[in-house]
Length: 462
Image (cartoon, rainbow, N blue to C red; front, side):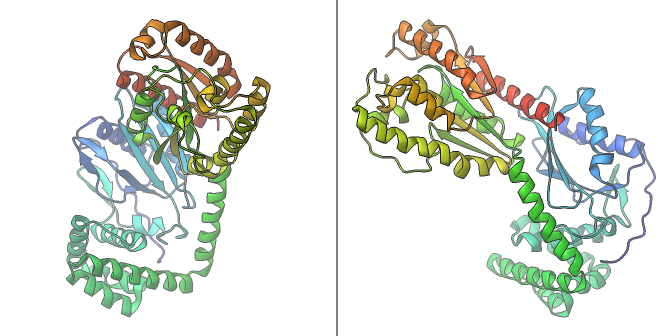
């Protein structure tokens, strides 16, 4: 809460580069920042798993990351180090979260949480400039001073209200080791009563007591910050609301639909894609056919074809008459049209990868699968009410190859299905055709590459 005196850290070449390609990429980024005399510091130690960087790398800056980080990342991207998949603007005044796909390494990503907020408008109420005061270089990395690192960790844990046992023990040790340096700032943040609760926090090892104390400390911190810095507090809340609105209006997630004849391997690939792209997005979600905004109408024979399409042959004729078909069709059309906005779109706003199998396009291609005996013009009219995915992927192969996986259907039937899907594909926005040569893992890897390229291209065009 005090004004910081900025100290330029001297540039020292020769990083103690962490093992792994993500570590080398991070070291190269930091080296370029040093070369450009950018003022920054890592806000916490880097965590590793299996030789690669795990979790986020939090970095504090004295300038807007768009001005000092983005140009460096674009140069390294052009040199082939990685692809910039996402640049997400969060609640911090100048807070940008970069997701980088390490080149030529399947499933390997580097996450950079880059923060610049001189006024403490972020959720932790910490002016980044105050944190960076007194920063130092340890083993080649520019880090916060030890006491500031403990303060940052404490406020982060207090704000989130929970902490893992191992991390909590480390925090306790830090509070005890730096008690003298932290006495004044902790009193400023939490007051005399809050200091008593901090002392209790340092002496307890009961998880429930820890969580209770963290919640009490959060209330103390919020009330004190509101009294001391009402403008920053209110401005932070306003900025947070604006950012949520912007993220809703410009969602950074991706909605992907997989189409293909029976036996093309949609279910296997849809199962693998969320794991393959888990680190490329903030979350993943998968659904089959419809968003499930409305409950299923019944469990009659037609439903088992839509729920288990790869295990049995689909029906060749609708099981319902025209009136029943129309009622069921309108019911499920509402599920698609409204469910997109209620179920799918909010997930897109939270940077989620959404993988759908079949979707409404399959209703147009195979209405009998769902028991619909309706004219094609009505199916097409209904399709106009259903929002398009961001990317529609058609899985194709030679009919005989698909028949080997789906012997319930003849090669001729598979060929006809494939032709209908090809004709339907242009109605569903941006699309790709992917051959299903190789294992499901190989196919998922090829599709993952396409989707990462799509995100990178979309980001460059913003």
